[in-house]
Length: 241
Image 1: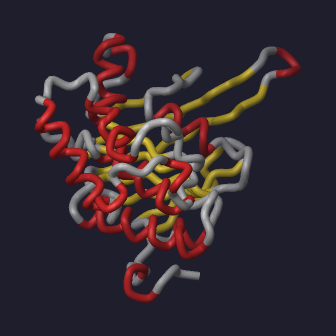
Image 2: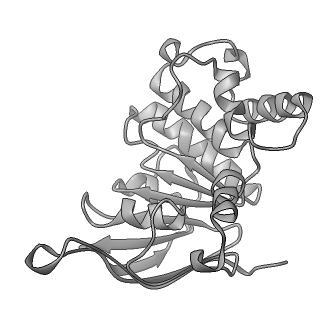
């Protein structure tokens, strides 16, 4: 089935607490994401970015409003179907890498393939291809503590793409990196997008957000603005500032 909009959010609200302690993490957020789009969700700490990312990735659910992935909302899906979406259709990249410390680079990347029906040979092939795509095929037998922060994040990207997901969710992927390593990570995300990958980037950094085709600005749980971005010079000219 062909979906023009892979993600649709309508009037999303997420409320924590009750009575006087009630807090709106999200307060009426609406947007759509096309297949192949590079969207940035930008705003300061505490604005609701991570809450929204968790809802998009089926790691949390809204208090009210509707969220649809490939035309279906969570209440139309079984628990096993939701688990399959999280494992096969969405690739997650986090600020702190979340690699298993006592597991080699290759085995870390193969982890999302554990629950697939692929042969061991195919799993190995997929993992090697993913590591090649991020320039880390020379570190297969290394452990995370033997890598720099930038290298760890590139391994995390390989892990995120190994299942060939429909969407990559990147939550502050450069937030724990120096500018040079951050630039390399953003170049990889740009290249993946140019190959047709849908990417949603959460960030508070203007220079990384400007890599996207479109930026949504969040503040206090609400969308306060939106703009298209046409500065696609990143790979050649360095970070847009």
